[in-house]
Image (cartoon, rainbow, N blue to C red; front, top):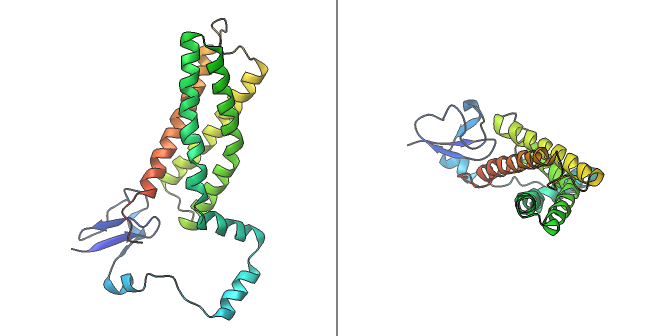
Length: 209
């Protein structure tokens, strides 16, 4: 049985022909390459002379060096745990505060959202580097959805934090906008969850390397 590797995300498909679409990253059929023993043996990193390596390092600009550090140290998987872990907690705190009228929980939710808002620029930057460098800027539905989710999270976070600063009582029982405020929180939570789901598919795909 033949094996086919997605050249975008590294997913391995077993079958006589490659799938019409990569189940992990959504890449089209033409992006699959048949895996042979020769290809497997030569799949390691290419070697070059010390002179060539030194020249590449010397010519690399500061942005390229930063991008290399992001990939080498897996900064996107590290930074993305901030919204993935804290946003659900913040929304739960807000719901508990609205149900049981707990001002301390509402304040905790607000502080959590402020922290996530400051963490979003590194998340988005490292994600962009991962997409352009590791996945070659593949224009598939999976990556476009992840990008859209990141934009939605950033926008809703900004709206929620600014809204809460302008109106500290927005989540109180007396506020006529409390349910809209909660709805925006839920939209943000959904975007975080979808982005995390797609990121997990890419991270835990069946890779050869």
